[in-house]
Length: 213
Image (cartoon, rainbow, N blue to C red; front, side, top):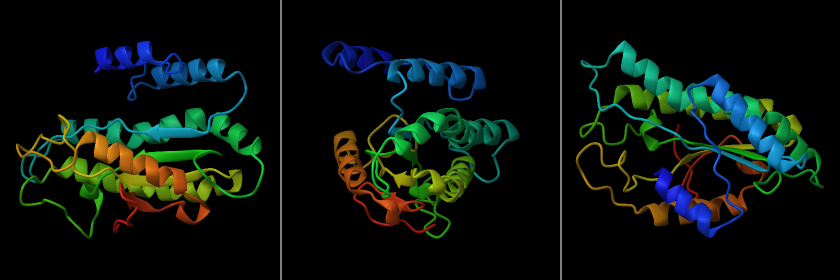
């Protein structure tokens, strides 16, 4: 993955790679400081919390260790990252004219999963992944809390189900996912470009459809 990023960075001079271990508060602080220096006081428009891990455990085999590790990466890290980058997001929102919300003004996007939908219980028979489901349901609540808490600052907060995507993690259960990375990312970028204040605090998929909590 690092090699792929480095290739992209060599082709696109505006792409800057910043080291970050999302479970390490010191690393988060250092990454935020690095981004802040590069922005030179202009503020941050968009924070996408995308890092995630899964353990394909069943209800009977779930462990304290796996539950803690998955929850730390999938739920606590987006909270800490949002806290660290909040001053820059506030600055971007303050520097943008108008009262509306958008991803070009200031936004936090948390990449969740339909696996965290309590109503859907998507693919339960195929993969229980209890720790993953719980962590994403909690991430969805975090997004709702952020949308309430950051509304006064003009920061849009949305949680996304990117689809079941053809990645290493997506193939964890043994089946080939139906969605390519390009289709998922392309769809999300389209949806991101159209988001407004009415969408803050919602749970959407890569096509812009509302996903049940």
